Image (cartoon, rainbow, N blue to C red; front, side, top):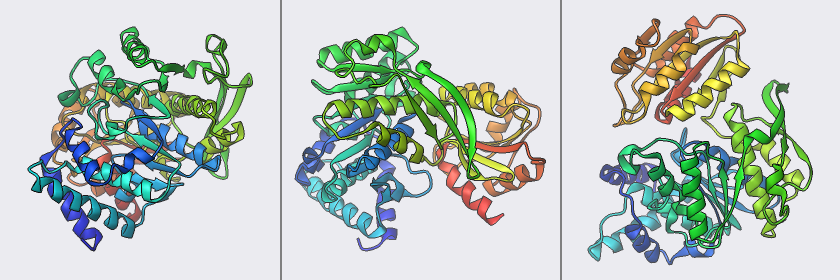
Length: 450
């Protein structure tokens, strides 16, 4: 393969096989590539919501600390190249073609031996390991796909820190419809003798699963909790909305301060450009992860933590695309994410007129998401994402009308943007597009045209 177009055609072709959990195929593929993943060090991140944001924050902190860091996340929001970053720089088209070509050749050698063709996620993940090895990354921040134990990224045999973000119901067709079962799969990334940072679950049953797994693996567990945040406020700087807060260390966790990753001072003053109340929880998780890395000997100062969090960006999570009128996109695609997004609107956008554009995948908790979010909207436009798993916008509109009387289905994303902008009137008006990440790129392009 010599062009990005040829690579895209290849990836689309193998994507037809869908998702297959399990590590056997990935092990064979990495053997063909010289097991390069064994030469890298990792921060491995699993969970239901917040994985991408925590990855962005931790990678930014490491970069500010002068550590050469690779970051692998999925899915892409706007550009496939954004999934592979070294020190905040996307992989180039030429580099992408080169690594995918190498992985494709390894796949051919596998199939000649009678092994199955690896899935598209396995190919993309193998390409990430190969790229970060070639780039001589000192630490790789690695996001799981949908699971944990059987996820292609879990081929790694050790990690500096295993991170668990918030865990809720999602991908039930693959992971099961029991929250404890899902937590057990997510916690499958925990490695023997490793350090674990977990967003403290509200459900005692989920905490038991995590704690039992850590006990079995002789892993040191530190919970992060946004309850230790105070002085939370919004501010404006250079035309950009920010949020700031103080983070206090929980007293019980400070008994063995240095060993268990607590902050060395009573609190830290933190400022984020990443908006949304839920980013506070993610930032606290990233701080505790950085502190655990600090305890392992990585030269990460508190100033690097502050600077890294301020510089961190994550497209598709309460991202501002336009200031007047305010147009925001958010990848909230399940009930837990919708609840957190709703809390952001209630706290930071009271007395605003909010117009929704919604597109979802059929296998998501769209009914509960609509129930949570729609009472906060003035008007709602639904669309059909360009995805084989998409729910038809007309069907979504029919469901949405159970919770809101002003709902219209639009045949195209561009028409939805045009209609939403025509309704937006006044300074305190927001157009908020959320649901599936798969249509947000098209929405951004439509907004540019308009």
